[in-house]
Length: 319
Image (cartoon, rainbow, N blue to C red):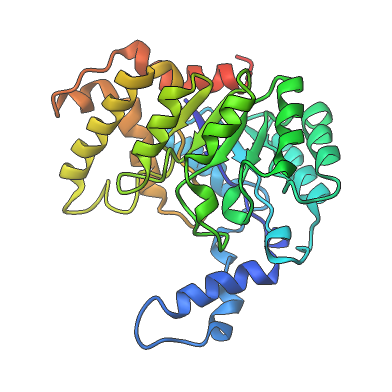
């Protein structure tokens, strides 16, 4: 099984502005409201996994063979540099790939607003083996911005895919740029570029219909319903109904664009509910039987496509 999207975060990758954004939200998450400065020292500590030990344990528990670390950098989003610049962040991702003997691959996540974004992208792919580029609109730029176009062109030239994050805006302060419809223009301008809609609109209550419409109209767009496992797909009173709803949506995806354009991913990082992510993997590993419970049919061949073959083909991972 291939997890098409995970994250390995380190404290050196989070600028103070990013951590303060989390602190402000946490401070007003319940009454009485708290002072963000009191929360700030604790922000992020639970997600740091510099050696990927927690990720590797998750992979072992969830029976995942390979995971793709989607690198994210947040300095340009907040107008300040993190302790590590874009070069060091990606060099660290390469080191993780090397240390894990390829079990944790990585996706370049350079912010296109960097003056040296193209150099970091090329170095990551050509010398460090990155399997593509992650476009992260939640950090305050649109996938259709002119600054992104040279990076798309370079990925097409180097024959690697682009994943574009949609739906969620919980890390960066911007959400309008994460609407799936932005992918439409990119897909039409670069018809031979493999594009993955990361999160496929953002879950059962998200914009999945918009994502599906874009994918239906553009055969180079694939859907990855990552992070759909929370908060109530497993381990809640609503879980049975929500699982049935999910299987119905997945069936709609399959009927509309085909199983060959759907990838499984968890979006796991340290600090997430590990058991829910393990359950999410197990649900797909046993999708044939699980779907039958709700009256939907998936074949073993279709499950193999979604669970590993599509990611292996698009990311060009060896056996």
